[in-house]
Amino acid sequence: MSPNTNNTTPKTVLITGASEGGIGNALALEFQSRGLHVFASARSLAKMANLSSLPNLTLLELDVTSPESIAAAVGLISSHSTTTSPPRLDILVNNSGQSYVSPALEIPLATSRSLFEVNFFGLLATTQAFVPLLVVAQGVIVNIGSLAGNLNIPYMSIYSASKAAVEIWGETLRVEMAPLGVRVLTVSTAMVQSKMTNGANVAAPVLSERSFWKESAAEKAAREKKANGVEREATGMLPEVYARKVVNDVLGGANGVVLRGAMATMTWFIRKLPQFVIDRIGHAFNGGRFELVDKA
Image 1 (tube, rainbow, N blue to C red):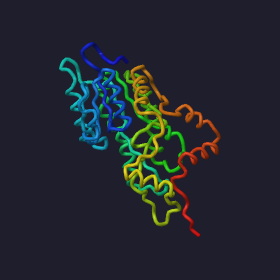
Image 2: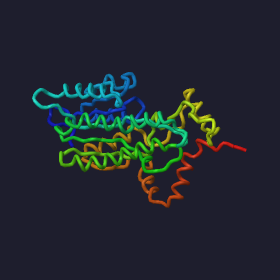
Image 3: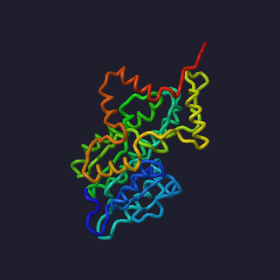
């Protein structure tokens, strides 16, 4: 896919979850630098202030859990199309997402439902709403997934479950949309530096009085530092590097699942190891966040 349909009309891309400091924001900057007209969205325009002065970039408020908000976004983007052609959208990037870290049995049901509303059902609703415009353009649906959806990482069960749903849904959609000329690309994302990955839960996790777990001293100290403005040590690929690779994938015609982010290939190979080895790696990576309560 070349950036422009002709010399005067840039292709269009809508990105959800484009708040500053995250993957979506970096993608907005990269697509804009390639000559596309970018619709960058977040729940609040203030979260995208760094994009406000750029040409060929439109900011819009979009809450992917609100049907009314999604409908308004469809109307705005439809009105952007020229009067000589039907409304179209060339690329939809589903990036909105939330994370949550907690023992699996301690996650409040309301929290689990809320996370799935953003990470999966919001993605589904947004895609359903924009499909007519994407079919006109014979465009691309890009779902930002996570390698966490393929690994049983301790204390990330609900996030991993939502990302697993995104990947299998996207791969099924890819087969169904192929006859309509629409590509579906799922980006299985490994380690990328972002505000979400550098400190997902500033608030203390909600643990019941009868819980078998408690927050570890190290995790509590890191969380308190984060609350006081001290970031966790940044790890992973820089978001602008990640964005460059993903945009290359999109414009280069990639289809299906691609792996992006630091250690993406290594993490893919980890999935092929014996399960007891995967368990140990997962515990080494994330197992120190909580510890068992001494019930003696």
